Length: 416
Image 1 (cartoon, rainbow, N blue to C red):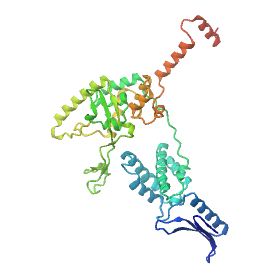
Image 2 (tube, helix red, strand yellow; image 1 turned 30 degrees about the vertical axis):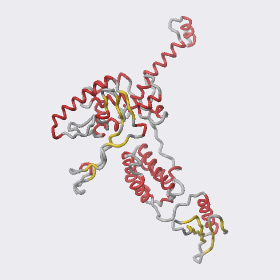
Image 3 (cartoon, rainbow, N blue to C red; image 1 turned 90 degrees about the horizontal axis):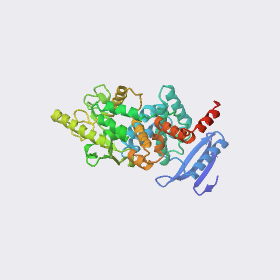
Image 4 (cartoon, rainbow, N blue to C red; image 1 turned 180 degrees about the horizontal axis):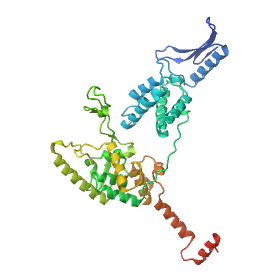
């Protein structure tokens, strides 16, 4: 086979009886030609392999020579050295690590990276769901491997990303149903009698994410001007053994556990850093909350941990997101309302803004959205809005007191 602009390709039959092919695909890091070798039992087979290598070379998609990555070794390298804070958030990194260590490495880690096929991924997703895991969990694993393999392609370790071809697990998302105004009022009434009750008023009235509410500090709250500044979010705690891993427990239950993750991190996006106006009743509520916290500080004395947080444990430490979640569930039960995710409080706040007719750019600024498309996900039609539309249609088509309209209506429905 002849030369071309990128090098030489050749096919020959060896003494072993096999047909061999060599293709020059470029230049190695040391400046020497990068030659690849393939073999097969027949000339036709080896010719097809050579043509495939030439096709990849001409498209600039030949994997780099060097370390022979397995899926497991690549994922470990990616999660330990590439997909790490501050390039991604602490919470995102924690989610990636769970996917890698619990699902991907045990499930497909033994495959050679360049041999991984879409079918391998699809079988993994199906097996996860057969084992009782939610489709959402399998879908999260799909997003993780897709991102990891995109980076492998970008760095030349992989020609194409099989996760872009594999069918992702199908999600059957139920449309969230926000609480209506009467239900919100019931929640606020119950919250008023609980410790840190203002935390739930902020969630339902302003739509703060859980991390944003728990990460609030008093310097972020200007009660004189009635402004609230969102600067950071509370991170889920992560612990390491302080006993040298000798206690026999998980790190989170070690008697000498050490916190290895910061208490707070940057907001979810640049749009998340924002300033929100406080309604007057919420200003009064926060003033009362601060007075109660001052009393707790005096009672705790030297046991108080001063972190400046708005919502704290009785000793001043920031609230744990898991404890906060269970508090939400108790609040719903006490108010006699249907069960809902904590994030549905945010849906509810967005819907209240819709009811008030607030313009989309203003809603985006309040909610911390980076794109207008988010409005479609959060602003839902609720019964009060549906009823309002029905009343407007009735007023337009069936004028009250118009006997002719009434007669026409009876005739229309076959009642005349």
